Each structure stands twice: as structure tokens, then as C-alpha cells.
Length: 450
Image 1 (cartoon, rainbow, N blue to C red):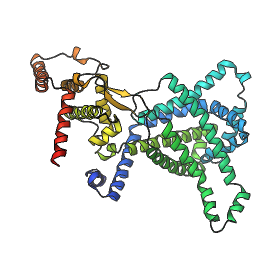
Image 2 (image 1 turned 60 degrees about the vertical axis):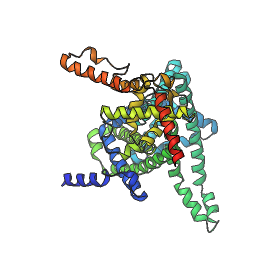
Image 3 (image 1 turned 135 degrees about the vertical axis):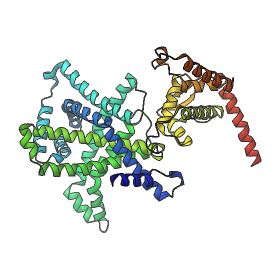
């Protein structure tokens, strides 16, 4: 029965072209496919491992991080609001929340520069940086980003996050406190008939702040350009999931007593670690949603479409080089990887694979900027079409040269050499410029006939 249900689901959800569906059905099928991909990503284990790794890093960095935040809050005179905020974060732990919050605040109060010394402060600072770096690494994995920030970029980026984050926290505390004021609520209620609407808006304000925080993280932390629409969608998804997970975890923690019986005094720590792991998982799941929204071609194709044959990858590479060369020839904006995926209707993973090989072969190069765009790495008149094919067919420079260790069979190796000679003979000395100019002339002729 489960097999028949799976087959029926695949037939209705995956066997169909989204481009040819009505708008309402296209949105429904898109989200059904995305939910299945999210489950597969979690089952794959990579995201779960990164979340579990961040739990350990969080335990090391939570005290110095809160001490840093406390110092900034103290400058604004709202340091007393740190404990209620921490208590609200730990609320799903039930009765254990107050005890854990009190212990953490006690540790924060003991962080004094004179007691720790230079070495101690450097260790605490490293713990904070390691936390941000691991979060960035996880987001780069989600967004398929293979380039890393330079040391100077990391320093300025991490510093801005550590400074802007507490400032946003101050703003959230002030807004929440103002919205919760009984005097303000009474004044709002007097503004009939819109008073109850304003009160309702004040009630949902904390949820909007959570969504705003997730959106800000998804837009700023990844080392790539993230569209606001994608970041907002991921933020909404993560915010709703966060509230639901908090409610569910609180119910489970109250109703379950077996954990306390088994682990005794360690039960508080175990529950705290489980809640941290769940929080990091929610953060990464929301990032996955933002990635799929910005790269819909990964959702529009059937599962496993990232595993393609060499011939298809060669065709994709030739199309990529033509589009990049044509954009440069027409003096237009260079192509980004997402635009190439949408134009060719090919999964972004396939585009990244082809672009990576072309980049290592010295055929394309990145244009500086937050949005990764590509231009020809040299004069298109010197880029042969056979160079493009060889960039896909042969090992990239960074890969191990397996051909050197291959124990070849002479007759089989002769067949491979014939294939190489056939490719070189078929493509001859055709350059990328010749291909672009040929198609440009054909496009002009088509316009004149039209």
C-alpha cells in the first residue's frame, strides 16, 4: 500500500512540467516538491551534522556572546532586559528555563576582563568568531557557494554582524516593551473603532520580529546575493516553524518525566542541547527554503536530476559559454549562475558543476561583486569550442590525474584516442567568437523576416 501511495504521489507531483500548469496548481506542486526535497535534505544527514556541531560550539560561545551583547545593551541602559529575553528563548524547556537562564546570567556576570586576562579574552573572542564562521559555512553549503571570504572580508563582516545584531536586539526590546505597556494599550483601545486592530497588531509584533530576524540572517550571512523575496519566504517559513516547534517542545518537556528519571541532574543539560539542535535545524531548513525559492529550477525538475551524463553536461557547457560570450559581445550585463539556470531550465547544481570546470580551465572568470557574474576569461577569438568540450571531458587541474595510474588495455585505449581525435576533427578551429557572431547574424535575419 505504501508503495502504491508513493507511486501515486510521484505521478501527480513529479511527472509534469510546471511551466505548462495553471498558476494555482503550479504553486501547490512547487511547494509539495519543495517539502519533499527538504525532507530528503534532512534525511541526507549533512544539515543534521552541522546543526549538532553548532550545538557544541554554542555551549562554548554562549557565555562570551551574551557578555558581548550585555556590554552593548549596557551602553543603551537596557541590560536588565537581557534575562527576560533569554528566558523567553528558553521558554519551551518549561520549568527548567528559569534555572538554566539564571545559571547563564551568573556566568555572564563573572566574565570580567581583569580576571580572565588577555589569553582568556582571546579564547572567548575565538569562540564567538567560531560560532559565526560555522553558521556561515552551513549557509554556504546550503547555497552551494564554493568560494570563501578573504580574511579581511570575514573580519569586517563578522564585526558588523556582532555590532548590528545587538542593536537590532535593543530595537526589538524597546518595541516589545512599548507594545506591552498597559498604559499604551489603554490609549489604543480608546481609539475606536481601530483600537482593537492596533492591539491585535501589537500581539503579533513578537512573531514579526522573529520573522524579521530570520530574514536578516538569510539576507546577510551567506557569501552570495540573496534576493529579498527568497530571504523573506525563508524567514516566514522558519518563523512559523520556530513558534510551532517551541509549542511542541514545551508540551513534550512538561508531559515527559522519563528523561529526568534516566539522566537525573543531567536532564537539564540534555534538554537544553536538544532545544539548541532543534533551533539550528530550523535555521538551516529556512535557509533551504530561501535557496529553493531563489533557484526554482532545482524544484521544477525531478529528483536526482543533478546526476546527468557527460553528453548533457557538454551541451550545457557549450550553451553557458555561448550565453556568456553573447552577453559580452552585446555589451550587456554578465550572466549570473541563477540567471543561467532559469534561461536554460537546468538545475543550479548542474550549472555550478559546468561553471566550476570552465573556471578551472581558464575559460570564464568571476566579476567582482556580491552577485557572482561571469565573463570570458580571455579573448573569445582564442577560445576554441574544443577547449570547452575538453574542459568537461577531461580532469580539471585541481583533480587527481587518475589517467597516470590507470592500468590500460591497449585496444580500449585506442578507442578513447579515436574519440578524442574525432572531437578535435569535428570542431576544427571554430572559436567562441565565430559561434557568437554566426548566431548574431542569424538573429538579425530572423528579425528582418519578422
